[in-house]
Image (tube, rainbow, N blue to C red; front, side, top):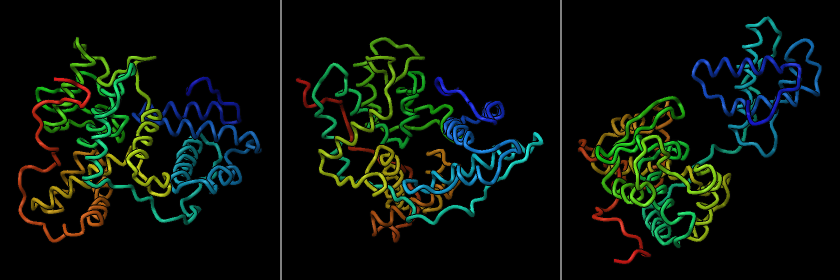
Length: 334
């Protein structure tokens, strides 16, 4: 159950059992649980004695002006899955189809940072003033890990000390989105920053401790707080924001930028784009090659000269920051 919320409508027990069944099959169903409470509250306004009606389904999936395309798609998916569950239990259910989706604005295009912008961004992170919250230690390493490995913020914040193997220079991403566990090699530069961070935050090794461990509250960092800090840094760097829907940079764009910069590096070094996409797809944990393929277009837009440079493969495939002998921030004296 999410927090202290309880189901109140006609489908209360069915919704609870539906979520439990999906989780027993290995599905996380966090977003679907959130939608289930919205659906439950909406159902109180409708006569549900005969099951899931078309009127209720349409009210739940009908387009709202502030929605993105994925918002309506998720609601339709929820109704289809819950409707199928009801039908399996001999309860009538109307299952909305994707034909009801509204034609919206063109698909969201992520902001891709240039190499110069990334250098500027990291320089700002390195100059965060020391404070009791350890922001000056946490953010320079977190942001480099997000850009240098392309992992999701949720994956980074879930890493334990045991998952960050600095001797072998790999990260173990366990139980991520899409349920594809991955072992990811990390560059020498990212490894050195992680060692520096570990020395500052983890003087004693406990394998089950969170790697990114806060010294406040529950010991966990929260994504929303990190997004706010990230947005403040972007504004201070004079990078146009334009808001999320306007294509301005947000935290997840570091992952998008990693993908584009990785493809750029591979193509410049002559790796055929088909091979590059397969490598990147496995590394990122994408469910399908099509999810990775869209980055080819973004790479071509960011680096128009690249599409003519597909030659033979070489061994170094992912972007590696400049060689680094030792991590030292501007505020640290010799």
